[in-house]
Length: 475
Ligand SMILES: Cc1ncc(COP(=O)(O)O)c(C=O)c1O
Image (cartoon, rainbow, N blue to C red; front, top):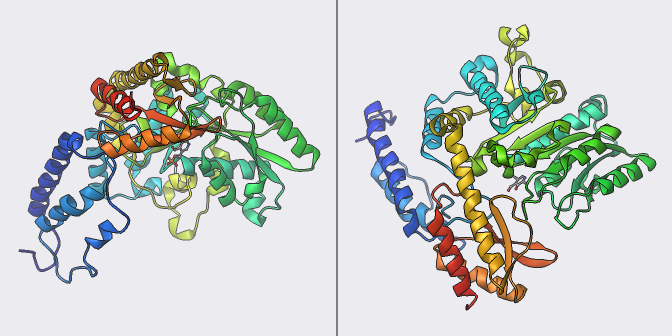
């Protein structure tokens, strides 16, 4: 059945491609019948796989049989409408089809010249998003700034930190390595990716200051100022601050304007991480989350969390691309080309860690064009409405309490009967399989998180979550 060279013919590809697309569409339709969290025990998936790869090619039907029989039971269904864990990673039809096209084109966009559309579509869509989210005009590529798609917010933080490191040292660390004098600042609530960036960039985790937060879990700007002054007095070189819009634990909003003023006073790079919450700024009524963003040197948010774009896709902007490009640019002979030398094109390899890059802009462009700005706003508003409704139920029930303000689509809450009870409730609802929630600790107490944002989640799923939670609490 296979041709001698074993390549899939165009006709075979058409046929099997349709089977795969059908399978995905069926999967999305039957998501609600599958337990959200995989029930696989460690080793189950591997035990079902043969110890050795096939010597001869296999029929495509056998591959799909094992997707169904082995992969599916080992998959946790992030696209389930009962998904309320972590933050969402919501996908959509246009995004998946854009991803498929990107794979089909198989282009590698490291340089403008290696696929002009890969670069120019990306620049264009990121300029669109500046307007769509109401971001500062300085981020537009038509001025000194510009946007780029990274794989993740972690990479965005690392690139921001590397640009900050080089700006602070006159581009000396790239040349000679660091001397351990640079310091960086985030809050106690900042995502762990910032500590990882500090380690990878060679600053050393001991040189990351975790600034105290207020009762709303937001960074205290005066504590940031005090920490910077103490480091300056000790002969250190403060270089970088990461502020968060929508912290991972509780969606706290760091006060960007006050933090930005401190950064300006001391000449520090301000990176703003809005990995999850940034999408809310599509809606004018939520744009207040970005007040003070005009102080930022760099900013990122993840369409792969809450904007219907399947993983991976993080949008990252800088106010002045020259710092970033100078920090990361290397031009070996074999990459030299006339377009680069003309200075008229963007080569995105200079805006990221790896050389090679995927055509991610295609799926993002598809999402934006398929939904339109109003379509995206509609869904953001729906997710916020559902979360607010849930928060209202919690607040009105004397056995439960809200554990933090819920400004958008994440609700932090707990049963009033203590950590052990909340742990039991969480385990019980997740074992049920219809929904999936995760937890955090706030005020040193176990806290449940209901994060609304899966593509298919609607009123009845949130209502079921509340019913299952109350049943598990025995009330
Ligand atoms: C605030 C924040 N920043 C960064 C990240 C890391 O995102 P990524 O997986 O894109 O690196 C997360 C993940 O949830 C997050 O919530």
